Length: 195
Image 1: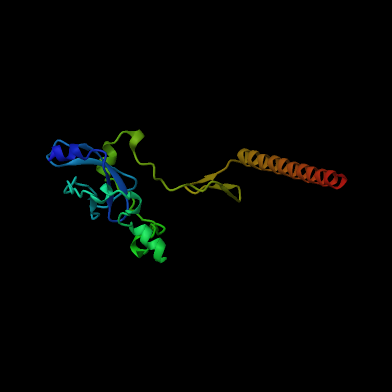
Image 2: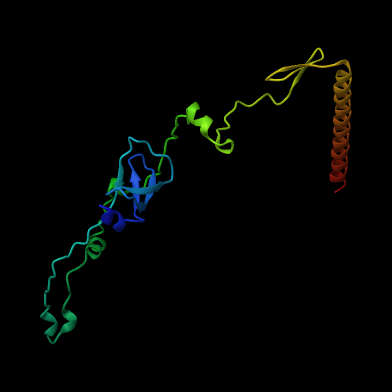
């Protein structure tokens, strides 16, 4: 019921695959609630809510009459389990299920999101999926023709000259930068030798 959901708002829940979550808010439908998870969960996942119920213990009263004796120092109460283990040098039993183990989560592969074309057409431009395959970054130059990944552009004679000039200028610039780096490296090595 919605009352039970309200009672467990903020409680931590966990799926069988180990994905943790939290109950957020009760919904209008009876017994339904909204929950947040740290990762995607599948429809086949079973979600568990670990809950505790208050149990009233039976009250037990055992009067110790031996303390009414005149020699109170002689009285010793029942020894605890820890004291017995220490005296008899018995190690604490280790339950193999209680030992902490590293959590190994296998990487989950989710199917790609597929939006129907009819729905895509109705969506505003900002929310339309931008999953276009990336174009080749560099355009190849083959016999005066710029070949892009999408289309080939045939250049005019003037445009060819401009492209070759830009290419030559960039080559000269790269060579100058390479020489400058080599000179700086040589200078650094000389300074290191002097020190």
